[in-house]
Image (cartoon, rainbow, N blue to C red; front, side):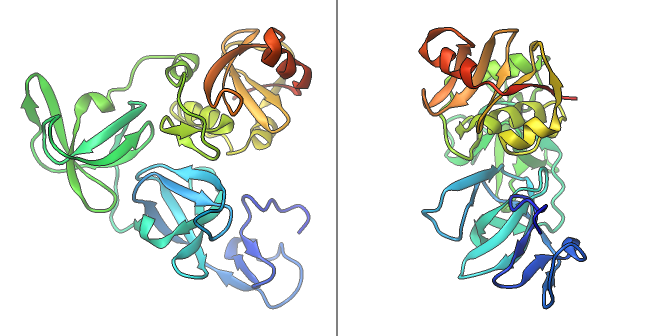
Length: 287
């Protein structure tokens, strides 16, 4: 079991529970093999390090993203895994819904957005959205209001609402241009959206918008990228427990707990830039 990563391989030695996919890879007898059950995040869903509301957030599932439930413990907690990157955490049962016939066909392109109860900006807000959130278009007519076009949508939890069509417009931009849109977004450990995100959450989310699936954590991302000596725009810069996205050969944008937000640093310049340059472990290029 030494070669299994606890962040992505689901097993509990004490309870003798394990993902059925690990059959033949675990030592010993008496394992109970669990078949994952597909579910969907009903909202921006915090995955915890342990089944405790006060436990650290390890990652976040975005509205409409798929997960798998593995096994439960003290109600209402379940061991869960995100589908897009296979990352494990604990979720509360009330924050996920059965997959049923969930067929999302709309992906939010705005950094932050809202679902409204009606096709007017004065309507009550039903839910928060973010870049990458997935919704289902209802089979109903769009509504034009004061030169604004509203689409009727279905949320994962079954609620119906309205979102302005502009929130789904995909801009023609580069990886670095998208990253710059996150400038000053707050830092949140384990976060993956512009409501709050961490260093690897930023790089994963930005590249995910271009169909490039990066692992969740900085060390995993370093292993998954091609090593380069001279960085260019879009390359990743790695440090112990940290990652940033290069804007050019020197400047880097990153979500960091020093500024508690997304900032730009120049490697080797200033107190923080100097510390970063001194701890730099290498650059990686996303393939």
